[in-house]
Length: 159
Image (cartoon, rainbow, N blue to C red; front, side):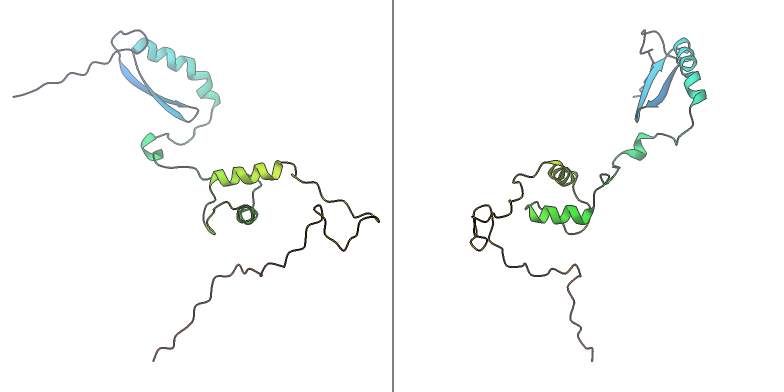
């Protein structure tokens, strides 16, 4: 059995028969609209002064942008500093690769937040500097030095 399908375009503005489908893009989004010849002319005439003053950018094609994401590092962030902060604060972040935006946001807000405890005042003569007080923490043992180098592999002799 034979089947014939007829597609009839209808003007999206007034419902009259449409002459063509017009594609356009603005603010990074691509649109399509079915318009009659009169409305196509009106759209193109309305946009003409803007098109004349604009410069051409590459073709916007939704299929080529699908699945692509822009990976931008927040300005003024230092990956080493972010990773060190994350480690100190118990935030999970991989030692290499992209740092998640959420971790960057936490780091930025922590840098902008005022310090929770002001620096302890110098001990006065009535306080003994030899005895630790709650405002004067006990010095901890120094942490073992960490090396940023990769672990060395042992070499086996081939015989």
